[in-house]
Image (cartoon, rainbow, N blue to C red; front, side, top):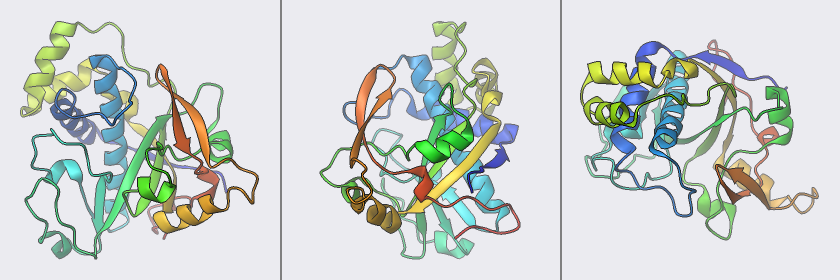
Length: 260
């Protein structure tokens, strides 16, 4: 089954994604060896990532799961590298009451963590071809894929390739609105309009896979004739990613049932 679940991200969620992105774009620390990105590109990448997070949280809510994202509970003014997961999910709201107010919350074992990977459909690809030929985007830092998996589940979400960032934005307007949007909803809405955040209103929830299942499948790469590591073009740089086929993952079910 190579289909994806199309999910609509409401305007209010996109505005929140823009506000989250504005808080992190000038203060957060990129992971090591990330290629250079302009402020506009960096902001747009973060908006896309947060729009994907909003889409996934909307899905969890629709399937009667409680969810919170790291941005909602972090307490470090967006200065530290994220812990490697984006969304927490639990069966009951009470499971979230014990979250610590530390910079990195202490999680109870009942909560499940998700790492959300967002990408544009590569030019010349269809979603079906993405499912058949591409991978979960897991950058290689350690010597084993298990070392670089920080969440219980990996999730891949795509957006249309046409969601490239606008080019006719004044740097003065961008800088001004980024500062204001961090804590002001009206400014966040203005920045969302400037960045044309509605480009991310349609998300494709493609695949998810557990850490244990992914680690197991990766260990079988040699038997399946697959390289354990691949080269991937990210911006202007070529990076190493772990082989982690989307075809190994599970598809998302509709809102009448949650895939497990």
